[in-house]
Length: 296
Ligand code: CA
Image 1: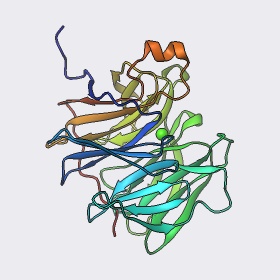
Image 2 (image 1 turned 60 degrees about the vertical axis):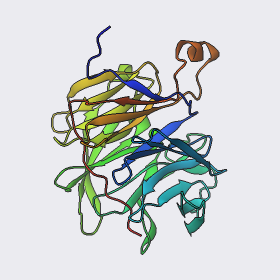
Image 3 (image 1 turned 45 degrees about the horizontal axis):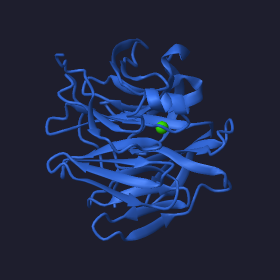
Image 4 (image 1 turned 90 degrees about the vertical axis):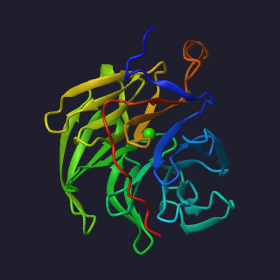
């Protein structure tokens, strides 16, 4: 069988319950991601092929790489900076105020190095979550209330638009974004995903400004045009619960994809033995670009 560039390859056979939040560290050519339900931070070094993992003993929504190489981690009990070399944890902020049943979910740094982190109720109660912005100077600031499952985040190449997904809406929203102040406004719907394609989950943006969206229960990562709302390209995965993606590699043209096995029936697990594993599309034909690290 010949292999086309769009074929996802298995990176690691380690099955996450809920693999999520891939982020590429270009300094070490390392991918970080989390297993939200297992409370684990994972790393995979693309040079040495070394896989490492750290237990946080808490639900973990997302990590971001800091300017000094440490990790900002969003746990249910609050935000902390984690030193991968020493295991040292430095707590920065408490949990989301007045929402004991919530946990943090997807999060990412904006082009100015501010961390945006969403939340959701562990019971998926409608409207119980919010999207926050977090900085060391400003703490946790609520930006969008009334979110149900806060997920994908991306910023346009000109830094004037923020894209955001509240999964049960099947929509991608765009906001005017002020890079200097971090304020958002003028919400509009730019993409509506047909329900037959699965739920929109995590998201990244490529060097042409197109959005790559992981489709939960949709067996795919797809490339969408936020200017027209059209689907441009799809990459089929051998697992249904595709959670997020990001570009990495020396030339930013490898697409890393996280997946989940949680909630699948025993029959579905048999059908999808790789559910929860990490995949990559090498030399995808598309490119990402450097993540802005969290400013510490
Ligand atoms: Ca997610």
